[in-house]
Amino acid sequence: MRRSASSSPARTIARVLLGGALVFAGTSHLTFARDDFRAQVPEFVPLKTDTTVLASGVAEIGLGAALLLTRGRTRTAVGSIAAAFFVAVFPGNIAQLVHHRDAFGLDSDRKRALRLLGQPLLIAVSLWSTRPRARA
Image (cartoon, rainbow, N blue to C red; front, side, top):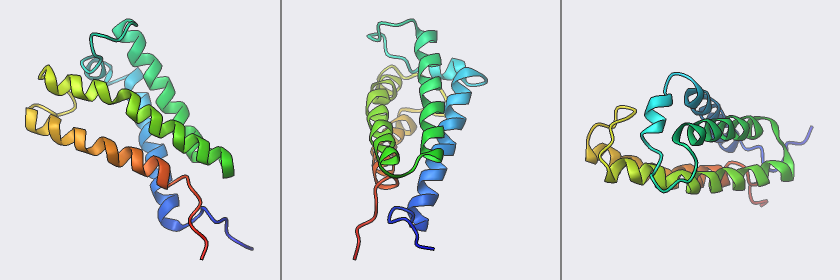
């Protein structure tokens, strides 16, 4: 049986971890971490804060499930959508730093700034883990 060009163990592990993390994060938006996520919603978002948190939680659950379940070109598209999602929520992370909002154990500007550095990694993993590896 021939393996799919996109199923290298490292890519699969990264994709499954990211998918699981998104499902967990999305679930936490809807339940136990809802207040922490409310603190991240920038003032310029036109929706109500709670609506924004709920919508982003549902989106994260959907993206996480799609990362876990899709294949082929659909998986590649999901990776691009996940990367775009991480770009779209980045202003919330910036707002948390600028407005000195404590959430998720990020209780100092240094910790909040370090978190910002993780966002490009999430974007990169979204894209890399869903793309076919180069053929030799």
